[in-house]
Every structure is written in C-alpha cells, then in structure tokens.
Image (cartoon, rainbow, N blue to C red; front, side, top):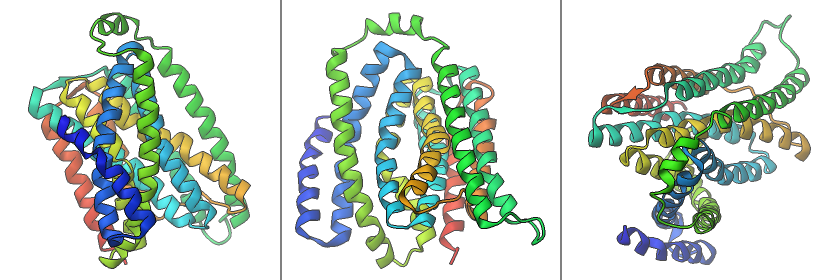
Length: 349
C-alpha cells in the first residue's frame, strides 16, 4: 500500500506534462493512468470506512455517485462541443464496462481468494431487474426510429420521446433509491462500527478529496485518449465504447475489486452494478436534458452495435445475480464477454 501512495507524485507530474506539452499524448496518457491508481486506492479505503458507518448500500451508492461525477462532467463538456455520438458511445460503454469489467474482475479476484462468495440475492436481483428495465428503455427510441417510412416518428418526435423518457428514468431512479435505502443496514452498522479505523469526518474528507483529484486526472486522461488512440488507428466508436469508459472508470474498477478481495461482495456489487444503473437511469437522462439546455439535442437512439452490447451485458448480469452466490468462473465469463465485444467493436469501420 505504501508503494501505491508513493505513486501520488505522478499526479502533479501528469498535470505538468499536460499543461506544459511535455512528452506527447502517449506519455501523458500512461502517466495520468498510473496516477489514477493511488487515488483509487485512497478512494477505496475511504469508501470502506464510510461503509462501516453507513452500511454497504449507502457506501456503494456514495462511491458510484462520486465515481460517475467525473464521467458526467466530461460527457457534458463533449456534448457542448457537439460530440453527441461519442457521448452516446461512452454511455453504452460505461454500462457495459461496469457490468462486465468491474463486476467481472471483482467476482474473479474475490472468487480466487475466498472461493464461493455470497451476497444479498434480494438486493442483487432488484438491481439486475432495474438494469434490464433501463436497457429495454434505452432500446425503445432506436426500435421506433427503425420503423417503416409510413410509421416511423419524425426526428423531432424522437427528440421529444427522448426528453420524456429522460424525465421518467430520473423519477424511476429516485424510486429505486428510496426502495434501496429503506431496506436498512442497522445490524451491519452496529457490528461494523466496532471495526472502524478512522473517524467518519476524516473518511468523508478523503472521499471528497480523492474524488476531486480523480475528476481532474480523468479530464487529463480522457483528453489524451483520442489523439493516442487515433495514432494507433482506432475508430471513434471503439474509443467511445471501449477506451473512454474503461479508463474513466478506473477508480471504480480498483475499489470494487479491492472490497471484493476483502470478501465484501454486497459493497462490491453495490459499486459495480449500482454505477451502471446510475449511468443508465440518471447520468444519461441528465445528458439528454443538458443537450436540450445547451442547444445540442441528444436523442436516445443508440446504434445496433451498442444495443447488442447493452442487451448482452444486462442479460448475463441477471443470470449471475439471481442465486446470491458467485465464484471465480462467473467473473471469467463476464470478462470473456467483454473481450468478445471488444474484438467486435474493433472491427467496426
């Protein structure tokens, strides 16, 4: 752990390289990516300590919210620049990445260390059902836009449909939060409180400070992705779906795996699946409404490749969540599906 904290020197180094134009885009990309590792370690430690006081539900929600703050800021900036297709690809990639990569690595590492792990099947089932519902909702505008010429809604009607769906999804997310948080974790809090190693105020301070630093590093990192990827001959779709979410969510990747290795699967699933849900039910609708406010309308019409990935990811998440148990092979299966999707997106021209 001390070695990870030593990597904090890379945070100012990445900023100096970025603002000073030192080393080129590839060097900035590598250094800023490595700088995210110690920040994610601090965020993970703070999340575990906050969860001691609040329980895994609120702890996971808090981590997912702070982890997605950077992504929301970055995508709003991209939307303001008129990059609506890149934003939609990033949304799809974030949901796919959280389910397949974050959850996959968490289950794999936790399973290899502890064997079969257990979690609350009611909460996991509710999360998986909500994810499936969110993906179905995101598919509807695309399906309607592909209708025959005589029955296909106009572009303006598709925009109105997207705006209306954005409001419904935000309301649904609010109801989901009420349902989740009213479940109660009082017994967990009383037991875990004895194991707390820092004050709640310090844990919250570390949580907020590391999140702000991750937001800054995310901007540097994502800014270096496009020129770096283009120099490697990668397409805009591949960059949006595979690279930006994978790197932008590095903090969540690290934290979810870290707590899974500590055999805290409820918290790990709360971070991984909860983050994907938040992207689908909150971040995406906010971006739709932000596009309307910025004069850059963004519809919820995803292309067929993105929809395929979303449907596949949500389906396997439901299958894994229903029994309340996980083992390392299930983690490997999630990662295998992500690798298959990655190869498919790579060959899309």
